[in-house]
Image 1: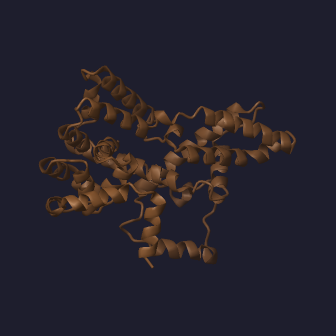
Image 2 (image 1 turned 120 degrees about the vertical axis):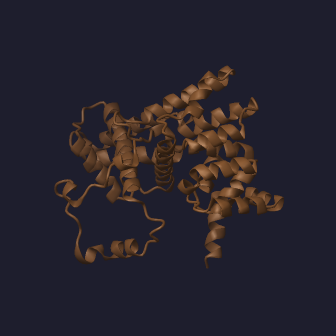
Image 3 (image 1 turned 90 degrees about the vertical axis):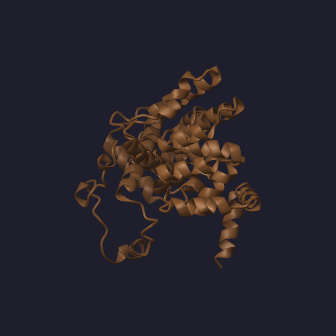
Length: 346
């Protein structure tokens, strides 16, 4: 899907019936927050639309799964799903850090993948496709599993989707129970509240037992990277080739494997837009200077690095102690890092 074909944010005239835009004094707090946001950190219209579409599809899938798991029939249609999603949003039950972070990661990957493939004139990722014919059967099977899983995360129009298996267990649990709570009023109309609570609890439990975190894109990418590393086939050439095709989750997990940090952390460092952090994770991942330069030359601007020459100069200046300090920092608990940042901001 080319950038100009991305869905645009629905206009005011496209709002659901009965949901008029809030005006006047009640909007002041939100307007003030929005008005003073750093323009460089705001979502683009394409990112907002893609993240919204992914979230709506994900929540709608969970709604449909819970309805199907109930022992009684609860009428469903697209309008009722949208109404439930709006109810969850109004209650701030969808505003979860890891859920939003995952949506943003998917949007970033889609943006880079679309632009990178447009530059190369390719419509598919040949670096990963080529691993399907790897001489090691385990590597070939892992590559095939990843490619199939990625295909399932596209709708019939090629739109990027987020799968329930991709969610961390805590967020999956929170989302399922939030949807169950949103369904409670309509189910309670046809039965006693206690019966409704019991049916919804059992339906939620059934769905959560079927979640398979090992089938997430992150887990499948990590497995493929581990097998390649064990075969000594996780080369700079493969990482750069994947990067030039926009396969940033694979690149992040490859560097994470080499650096001994978590894949999500490596992805966030690569996408930070901070040349020093990006160069540090490449150095931690043991990338050769020529490989790092080739990656920056091809997609550096897509990573938020406008001056590849300056970034490579940073790559050269980073000493061993600085790289090890960065590694130690990234292996600490996220709450520790947030606490340090909060104290430094005082």
